[in-house]
Length: 143
Image (tube, rainbow, N blue to C red):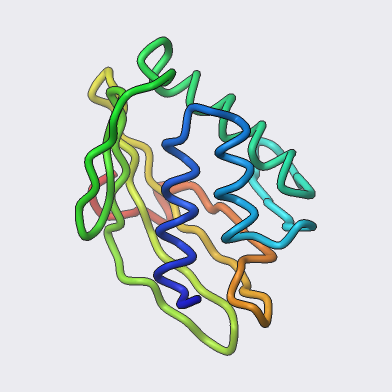
């Protein structure tokens, strides 16, 4: 699997309302023991923990609209249920590591940006995902 294919599946998981299907998507793009690191959430280990976190964020970002709405996919992002995410940089890779920056658009018109940094396992799935939210010192274009 290419890094772009892996990250596209990961994007699908963020827009999947069904928890069981979301876990299956994550299994395709993440190792079973994936480590997700976020400054607000700390360290989450494993696909189930990452799936649960995505489910919680879906509810917070779009409320009732997050349940089951079709998504629209573009070359650099996707939207549905009142929320959207757009890659604002390319995916850079270096010796099995990657990074890219993104901007979420929320139903109230606000925007949240950040940069994901991670590592791919030998089979092309992610084994590490680290989120760095946009700040005034490290802004993300469009956020």
